[in-house]
Image 1 (cartoon, one colour):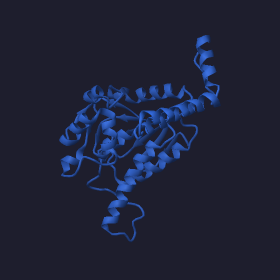
Image 2 (tube, helix red, strand yellow):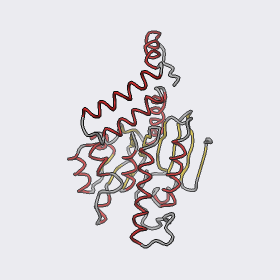
Image 3 (cartoon, helix red, strand yellow):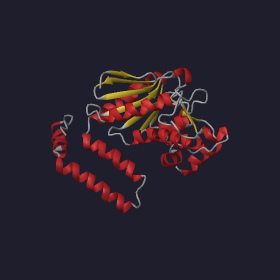
Image 4 (tube, one colour):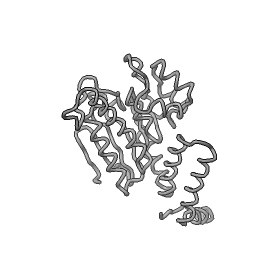
Length: 273
């Protein structure tokens, strides 16, 4: 992947070694989830996941918004719907949007959401799909479906939000359709931290660089374990899963020995896996 790889509405750049930033680049529409944006976004994410030079991904929006959810004025064209009637077109539409959420969740790399402004409706879901989130002070979150006469539940929000902030707070946010500003998001654990608008990307890159310093399979398996914990049938079953992942890295690399040596020699470890 080159230092800059652009489609019309999705911009891909490498601001620091082994870090890719993916920017929804339709600021005049607050980076709304038109299919002309979401289809190339999914394709870029899948390509980045296969790029072994990339260790961490940052996802953000251009301009003053992260993502405003559905584009009600110009939604674009759903791909591969020739010959279908409206009910099936609707199913294909949701399936396509859902595939973007699943693409983020299944990437080999951790994905840091740089929430630079409003994350509304499907944009809130997109933020939740990220493994980590850092918000600018201008950010806010809204489960907007309920405000539009629909349900507040779409694209995994009723699954991911309670697991991020607890069921009571998730119910409050989803039933009321109210805005959760950056300060509240920080307080309730929806984001890892809140920083000034102009410090957001550097904060994400700094977090990414810390992650890059660790073992590649260690980071990748940590992402897998966090994801699988959401579906674990029991503590016992999940601990067995974690144990196998830990043993895999311990027995197939020299990382533990390197970490011990590095601490003894008062230097940063150099993991070569």
